[in-house]
Amino acid sequence: TSRKKPRRQEEYRETFNPLTDPWNNRLLSNGQYLLRADAMGRCLGSIGETSMTREGISFKIREGDRVIDACCDGEGDFLTTFQVGKVQYEKRMEGFCLTREVCVHPSLPMEIHSLCIQNTSEEEKRITIAASAVPLLCPERDYISHPAFSELFIDTKLEEGMAVARRRGRYDEISEKY
Image 1 (cartoon, rainbow, N blue to C red):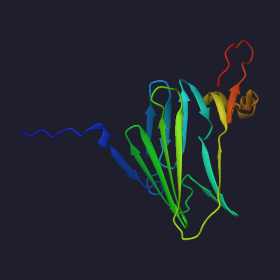
Image 2: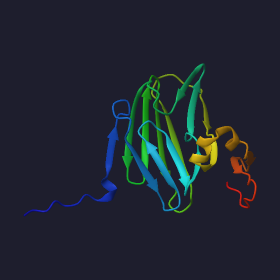
Image 3: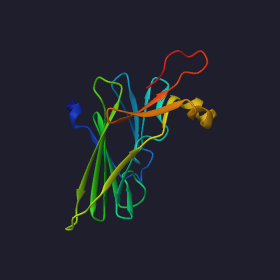
Image 4: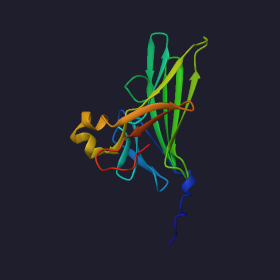
């Protein structure tokens, strides 16, 4: 009998069109941090039962009056590629090609997003980039049971040029979550 040679892990690559196959998703993890990445461009991170954000990190690009969402919103052509250790989202539309790569840091409990914006037109463009997230820092079931109450315990501030979200302890909780 002949045996098939196993594919090396680095060669793994699957590409999906989320408009025709939206339910594909993958888990990325380093043992401490777990990231659920779906084909639509949403990435939800957690440490144990603690969810980091409600809907992941959102990236928007503004050019004049036009606002472009880096996730799949039905505008333009969108492809999702799952690879070993990362997911890549590519959106092509009039005048732009947006590529976002998301991975989990190899040793720290965090996710890393990189965004590449390519001007595919002949004209010069002036753009603004914004990233946003709604921090949870609690188990998802706590948020679902009472969203407004859950958000009362979140503090945000700027530290060394970064936005930092912190969950204050309540009642007999001693530790704070960042």
